[in-house]
Image 1 (cartoon, one colour):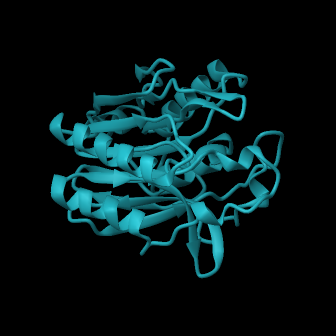
Image 2: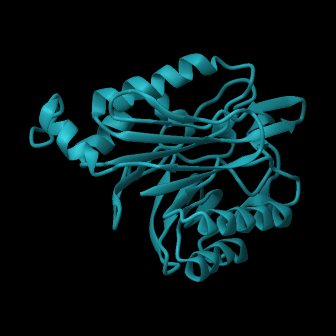
Length: 263
């Protein structure tokens, strides 16, 4: 399959971010991508930098015009998309990623499970923890799971998806230049290797409120190798992933017995 990652710089304006989203989808379609993923909170500034404040203007639901626009773009372009937004579901607010198929239907919604609360990441002021855990979705390309930003630091997140037979895990994130990016890369590489999965991590870029997001989106293989690493600039990443190779890798290296609970 061919994956696209939209390493975006966000504006204050939701409309401008939405227009950029659709433009990147169009670029991905023209390059033959099957799936496009986006960074964390792609339609808004990264508001969890601040302690709790009113951010209702960034809150959406599955029927919001912005979501409908992305769904319509999927239909017109024949592409899967995984946007990450601030989402209201039955009165609760989540950091959530949707998986939308090429007919514009929502295949599923994954919500952040573990919510951080630290300097520049005051996420507990805004998000409700997921009530349905980590999920994996069937697609024509293979099984796709979504693990949102901070959840990747908790090993059970990737492992839970692997136990469900996942082939590719998408990680929308918001990593800063002040964080240990080399360590984060190794974290992804090791988890891809241990769980025999492909992992694609898509990051924000640009400076907001004096903090700079580092970009450096990457794709790791089931062998723990980096297939692609972006620099810090805004860009559309296109990469081919041989998802079918996972079956032979798992046969030759059967460390993860998917038939045994708790393995």
